[in-house]
Every structure is written in C-alpha cells, then in structure tokens.
Length: 268
Image (cartoon, rainbow, N blue to C red; front, top):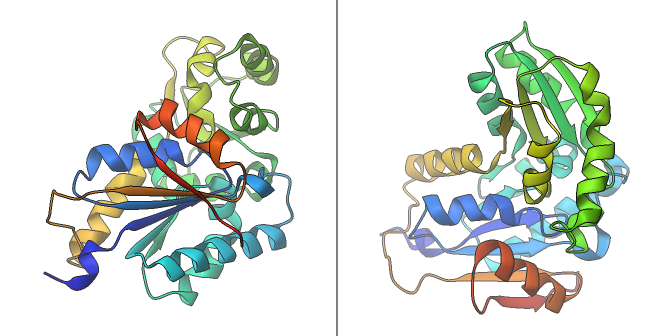
C-alpha cells in the first residue's frame, strides 16, 4: 500500500457549508478519512475582495498541508472561483473545487439549457459558473442571482426556522419572471436551505448541488493516483473551526449525524 493512501482528504470552506459536500464524500467514500476546516471567523467570503479570498484559501490549504493530507477539496464556490487556479501550483497534492462538477451536472440534467445559478455576490459576479457551463454547452442561457442573506442564516443555525423561509421567498421572487428548468445551488451553504428553496420554485425544477459530482471527481483522481484507502477500520473525521467550536459541533451533529464529532479550534 502507498503510505500516502492512509492520509485524510482535506476539505476547506468559509464556514459550515462545506459539510454538505463532506456528507456526499462520507457516503461515497466509506473507507476514507477526512479533515475539515471551516473558516467561520471570517465567513462569509461572498462579499470579500478576490485578493482576500485568495489569501484566506491559501492559509487554509497551508494548514491542511501542515496536518498532512493526500488531496484538498475547496468546498466553497467563492474560493473555487477566485483561488483554485492560484493555489493549485503551490502544493504537492491534488486540489479540486466545486464549480466544474456542479456545472457539468446541470448541463446533463437540464433539457432546455436554461439554467439559474444561485450564489454569493462574489460567485455570481465572477461568472465562473457561466464560463464552466458555456464551455460544456455554448447554447445555454444562464441567469445568476446573488443571495447574500443565505449564508448568514445557515451560519447562525436558523436554517430550519420561519425566518429562513421568509428570506428565501423574498430573495427568489425575481425568478418568477424567468423561464428555466434547472437551478444550481452555487454555494455549499445553500443545500441546508433546499427545503425552502424547493418551496419557492416552480414544480419540476432540477435542483443541482455539487456534492455528488465533486465526490465523483475526487474518486476518479484518487483512483488514477492509486491513493484510495483500502482499510475500512479506524476511519475517523476531524473538524477544525476558526470560530466557535461549540456552535460548529451542533451543526456537524445535525447535518452529518455524527454523535460526538471531534471539533477543535484552529488559530491561523
């Protein structure tokens, strides 16, 4: 066995949103170990400058490098849009993002190629999804809608409450005038609001999250590099947050259904 194969897969996000991607990775990669860093102290990234996002992303992946990982997943759309190509050449392990896998899935599932992208202000302004979709389907029509209030709702842990329903309904109201058959949740926080998002969209709309497609990409790369972890025993996941470990632990328990998650404070 390659000694590197037993190392964990690192996951970074601006906060707790990347747990939606980790949920898919846990389901699809049952032997792998994971190390997650959520930058809650500086969340959200969506209203940050590109330079700040690149700096923060580099710091988080450097932390993963220090812990020791065999792959890094940037489970943040804003960080993927602004920082992926900057950080990839700087580290000796593969680094993948969430935009290309999500765009590919949307193109596959949309019959009309009329696609809505819900994202942070930074992700929508970057047009990274537009570019990824058009590279796959030049005939596609894309409408981006910034949803700046969604991430704070998730980070505050009120994503199941009536307050969240109200904010989602208000934010999605402009889509009533649009024609589309697929919606990309272009932020990994947004799947935690998917029950309300479904409620305020027309019936029959394909809702695309990037978690499963990102897992496909991770599995393929590990297979190509012969880095799959073969052992099924002593599998563990470790979580770090730059914010409040207690608050982070509550969300890990709720979303990943891990009874006693190991959550630690990370000081960058």
